[in-house]
Image 1 (spheres, rainbow, N blue to C red):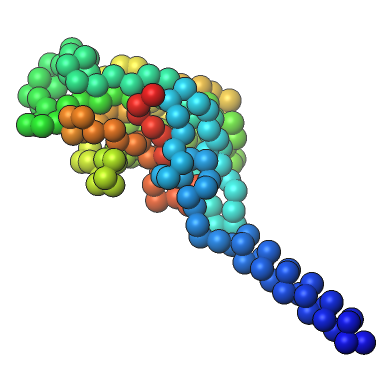
Image 2 (image 1 turned 90 degrees about the vertical axis):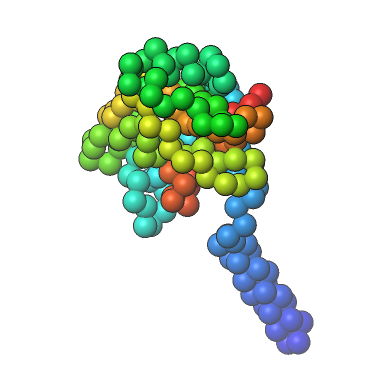
Length: 184
């Protein structure tokens, strides 16, 4: 009888430990976490449909396909719209353009998915400081709203520190956010 009680107690303890690990808040090992960002050229899935309290009811396939920075990025920004010339890089800073290829795999009730260039993406320095959004216009190709089954390529524009190796985060306020590298 003692063996049966010991065995059942051991099984219950093991189940409890397993359940706790399922709800762990340690996100460092998840592919796409800040500590384990997606490499340039690698594809990741943003699954906003997973979970009970999901705010983002869509699933995307996302890949960083190109990164342009420095003078080349500034040339693209300037040539995109005459008003962009009024916003040269600040001292010690440079423009960075990160081109994403994004495919809408699923969308609840076939609602459009807004990918406009300033809301869902943020640039974060290697040391963990969020950069302010770079207000530039008409840099093409640009990310736009898409529906399930559609695919788009476009730049996300930021102004970052020269020599920094920032990450770009998609929907940082989501528990399923994805972090992407900007260097190879």
